[in-house]
Image (cartoon, rainbow, N blue to C red):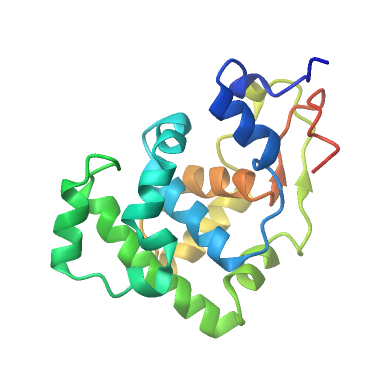
Length: 187
C-alpha cells in the first residue's frame, strides 16, 4: 500500500519516518518542546534534513537537550561543542542555545510550564490549514511574528518568525500537512 505523503519528504527514508511519526504531532512535553526549539534554532539558514541527520549527535552533544544542564554550560563545554564535527559548529547558535535554555526556564517559572506559554498562543488547539501543495504553504504568519517578538522580548535568540513557524509546524501547533497526505486527518 502506497502512502500519500507531503511532497517535501518523499524519497528519503529518514525524512519520511520523521514526517510519518513526528512532524505535526502536537507536542505538550516541555523536554521535547525544548529539543525542537534547539533543533529549529540550528536549522536557521540550513535544510531540515541536515539537522535531522545530525539529530542524534546533537542529542549526545547537548546532554539529551537537558535545558537545566545546558543553562549551566561554561566556556570549556562551549569550546568542546565548537570542536564537535557531529553538530553544526556555529558559535552564535551554540551560545543562543545556552541563552534560550535560561529563558525557557524563566518562562516555566512564570507560566508553570513552557507548554502552557507556547500553546496559549493557539488556545491549546492546533491550527488546521488547508495546504494543497507544501510549496504554497507559508514560511511565517502574523502569529509566528507575534510569538517571535514575544520570545525575543523574553531573551530568546535565533527565533525569527520563520524559525518560530517551523517550530509550530514540527510541534503540531499548526497542521500544515498537505490535505491529500495520509497524516493530515491523523494529527
